[in-house]
Length: 371
Figure (cartoon, rainbow, N blue to C red):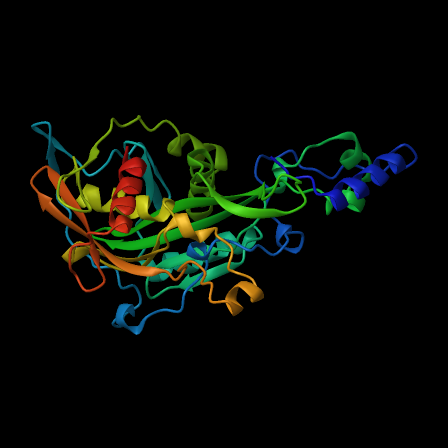
């Protein structure tokens, strides 16, 4: 819900007065998604520290090549005693097809990552996004936080005065998209995930606001994936949307285990790798590197209990008060296939079992994302 600050309300009130004697053609497109040119209208965000970028640790730097994701052969797997392919392929559109596995959707392109990566980069830039992460070596790109202007109300004031007051409107939400490419046996697998922020009041007087994470929007993910599919090879966006839509709902297939920071997924390794990778993207983790052949994700994470706590002011620091530790901590998420199931565990950066509260929180969040 948009947050109404006093200054914004005052200017909108003035605009309402002018609306009676002004007439400007409505320029709104009516589309459900409109990120074009929103970057110039979007205020700078003070986001929780786990949502900001961190200087890369050389320990996780790719060891050469263009795309560092490991390419391991994928074979059909047994599920419920029946031989299953890795995913359902409803249609092939040009160079790219959409594949589905329960709630998970991704694209598979025949072209190698070196060819696909610049095409996807152009896709985001054409839609008004700036990339804050642009790493072809790791096969990862992430957009800046941008407002979906299509969510703004098409009321009388905005319809009448158009661009004159358009900058005064704010949806109170921001979106960021991450695209991850993995080299597969038959081309490139493309995963797209969404993360969101919402603006909230920080006090009872409602004179100050802050940004906090909101749930990922699966419908928005599907919409953007369909548009990417159309950009890469489908004939029309309508055809692409038809291919992406309609994935069957999957039952709960993940649960916590008794061992510290450990969970079990009812999927063989190849399928679990896809699901856990997307769950990490959606859950707000930053995947700095990955090694599919070893079943390892290298991630960083900030405890959400401290992410939104303000630092002590000057006088508090003068008397020895210390703020919460907001520095991102690096972890390893390991996957080990055990037949038709996969065990997922959270480890410290050194590879030891993570026995603290952070490990429990990470596993709990992954279980929620994988249901």
